[in-house]
Amino acid sequence: MLRAIATIVVLTAALFMASCEAQEAGPGVAASPQAEAPAETPVEAEDPKVSVSSDAPTPVTTVDEAIALVKAYDGPAAEFELPIADSLLDPAGMNMAIIGDELLGKKFLPDGFEQREGYRVYKYKPFD
View 1 (cartoon, rainbow, N blue to C red):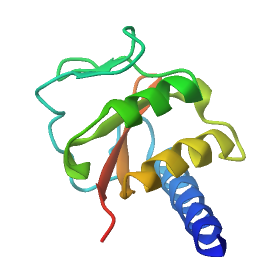
View 2 (cartoon, helix red, strand yellow; view 1 turned 180 degrees about the vertical axis):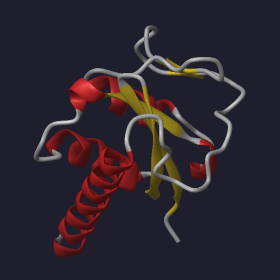
View 3 (cartoon, helix red, strand yellow; view 1 turned 120 degrees about the vertical axis):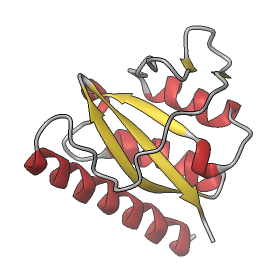
């Protein structure tokens, strides 16, 4: 239990630090040196209005939408991208901590994000 809590704290701190770095760099600057193309195939979630496509991903605006995307995805961590609306990014990072807990359950770790107009596309890597 303590290990899981420590992992969530580390994950939240990593996302917060990446957020601070991106804000210092300015809009449109990728926080990850590995800016890969989005996945070719859309990922269907339980909610039909939530999807990730290769053209312009629709950013999720609620924690439930994000969790639905994470649960619906069944591929490698390196190909998963999660578009999160800026409005979902609270100052304390609690929303991303809740989403991060679901990602940790799939053994995904954050691997930076790309800031876009009004949202961020988070990228992940496998938990080794």
